[in-house]
Image (cartoon, rainbow, N blue to C red):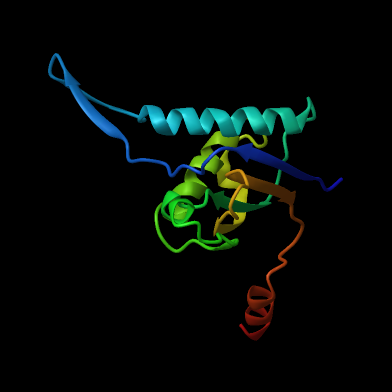
Length: 155
């Protein structure tokens, strides 16, 4: 039985930060920054609510994340219209994806290594609309990439 799950993570998308290091009593340890932990917990809560007690997804998975940042304050002050448009600045798409993938670990799937396809979009939200991330996770069957299947026939 193939399954698909869609949920919304409210708030501004946050990129996964690099691990920090601290040294105590001659031992160095790495830890995840608090901002990253908070965002991953928010993703986990939204995913858990969407799962509603159903079993975790298994097998190869596709994850699609549509990230919406709020309209910049500079446009509010100038009273310029703020349409939905691509956001080609700020947080890297791959770092935002890492935070979302890690937040879903143990909730939607056992480990994010089962995600074989990943698609991330970054947008600036229209004025007055809330910042959010819309996440869709789908189970896959077989190889569904036309490029791979067409090239494998040639070999």
